[in-house]
Image (tube, rainbow, N blue to C red; front, side):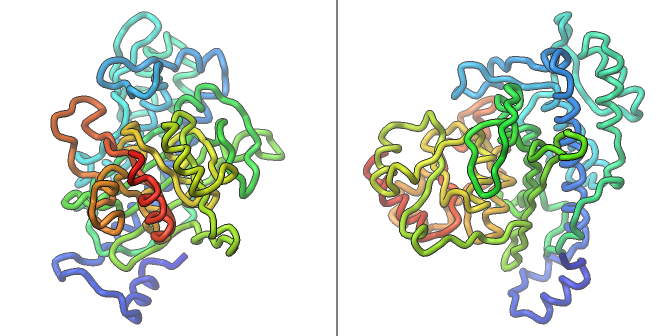
Length: 407
């Protein structure tokens, strides 16, 4: 990966079209990407720590109610890991980039109720000892578990290898906002099935579907420009047997496209028939329409919106179709940025179906800066029109035309 200086020189030698002079090249963007990779790995460590002891883990799970609840699920849970990770990322990023601090949003409320019925506001305190004391109140006085979590939370992010210097991008961090999904596919995280993740194969469920998602967008336009995905439970360490993770990242702004994943190359035969990943609860009419387009063997099912979009990024599926408004900005922002970095994107399905221009209108792409009108709670930030995540524009067009008379 290029350093910021080398990347800037390459841009000068290229035919890249620069944005207006008011937007300047900022090494801060490279610093931000490196920080997000490090805090995402910290988050993965917290997620793994919280799963180490089954009896302890049962203390950490709490059902969401009221406006917090995703209406798609009969039961919708958050865990202390969700809340701690979100607040830790908010703390670490805000400390290094105070100009972004007020624009870091996440899925979870930082309120948690302990076994005694006491409501505790979870925050990252100034010292590890203070954080441990606070967490002990959530964990019903379990000082050992609280200390273990506090140690993971207060690890200096600079001690974690990020794996990239990051490209320099013509944006200033003060122009940006961040969406955090601390643990996407929480139900898979809670269930904890240790499926073996086969290389180059989509696996429908298991711990590997649980992802840490951090997406960065431009506050004025809602355009997703940077994304970090951490898969905390990617594989077991052959030596020690503990879980090890894997991270993915992408940057896309103007003509600048960088991604940790190379654009997948399918065989000519595979390109003739699309493969689509869906939720098992998808509408029957959608399944039938896509079966006619793809064939029954090219429809796949998986858990977690983030994991399904990651499958598209990796080329394990050509597209992800969701007809319901059951995903949110925190689910899609990070993987959307990665897809844009390899030439794909995520469109609003409902708008695309209604538009005379179809999916080719850039206004169909999801944005991340404005809440939905006449909504409250989590629904303020729902992707209400459903979505299609895609790698190839021609395939997106085929999908929209197939679904146009069905929804």
